[in-house]
Image 1: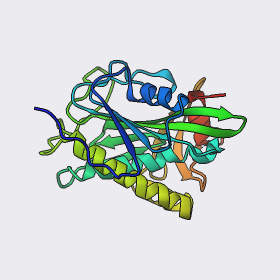
Image 2: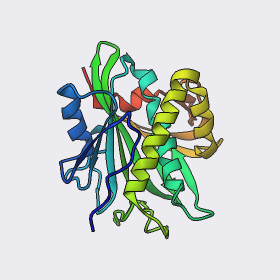
Image 3: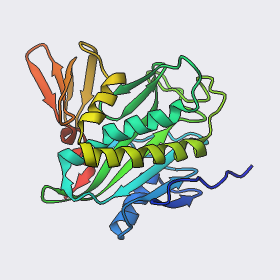
Amino acid sequence: MSEPTPDIPRLYDLIAVDSTDSSRAHAERLAVGGAEEGTVVWTKSQREGLGRAGNYWMSGNRNLHCAIILRPEGPLELCCQLSLLSTICAAMGISRQAEPLEEFRYRWPNDIILNQGKVAGITLSGKLYGAVVKWMVVSLNVNVYDHPYSKGFDAASMRGEGFQSFDRVQLLEAYTREFLSWINRWSEEGFEPIRKAWLFRGHQKNDPVRISLEDSDIVGTFDELSPTGAIKLATHADTETIKLSDFFRPDFSS
């Protein structure tokens, strides 16, 4: 059965492909080639799904893989706030198909946890000129229909958690609408509304947290989400502050 064409806001330019290596890599090539801000890549099947820092995303079957091209021309730390923004938007889209009492949590700075399993992840990538982001790709992978079953990896899917509706087209429509609304709010009001919305489902005081950076893991308990989106952890020795740019910098080339 063929899927309908997603009905997304007209400010976007939707590029739908049946199969590609990954929505992220496809969007990055388009961005290099001059694709306009607001281009959305949606692939029905991706062969080599990408997570952060070159990690492989197990794409599964009939899941949602999409990426949005932006040209913010702003500092990296500011642009990386879009990870938390995108997390909120994706969760709001998923929740529209959710059953009552489903538990959604956010894991800093780019994961959505559904009933204790990872259901979605966001990655940011792009091109830096000096300290300025010339273009970036906000990528989203959601386990809509299925999820990986592998020892030691806690994952979830909408169908696997018993959703009666698990429609990736509807999810893409909801996500793009929420993203447009929230990015406009971010532009007008700054990061604080995003910070408050993220904290509602994010880490709570003293929650154990492990952050994997390019060359180290930092383990501690959650202390605070700063006004810029950085996370502050209480460790056995001191308080560690991890910036969003520390987390995503490996996926931005100079």
